[in-house]
Length: 115
Length: 113
Image 1 (cartoon, rainbow over the protein chains, first blue to last red):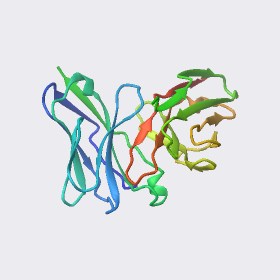
Image 2: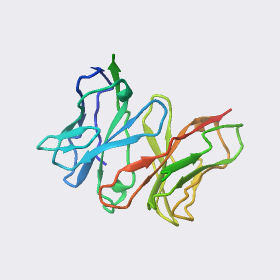
Image 3: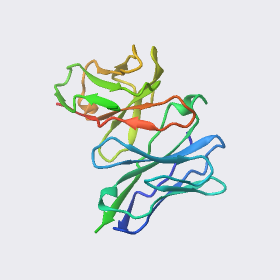
């Protein structure tokens, strides 16, 4: 798996958009970008993923740069319940070898939403 | 659909004791894995399985055993607990499609004294 780099922490005002960056400069052409979050001591929760196109779902938007070396997770209207640690990981598609099974999580970004 | 269920939620062991952390999923996922998370750290992969009868080591496998006799269950065994194994343990499963996400349980908080 390619390594990712995320800021250790970020603050965001409630109601504003939260933009969480992730650098994955060594990403391969067949690696997907995934975002998860972990609220307090709960199990991590899947948010969104993408390969090269921008993606949007009910939780967030994912913007991937054209060269795929970085991405941004956008929470459009952050609420206090979005306070969590956000993890960006990259992995190859299932069946592409050990990289599709040995999913590596870094330390993530601790997002604090401020009232 | 219960998703990924872990039991127990909390456990205290004495050094040298053994125990099994249970993990079950009802989504018919082929892939299952165990992670541990220590304070201020990310998740570290202990063992994983890509199907019944198949297991492999992750990043930190020492001190842990696993087996996968059914698709649904993936227990993690500590044969002789050590204080260094005090941690929160998460089980996760994933469908074997090309880009499916991981689904996590809510964790087991283990303290070894």
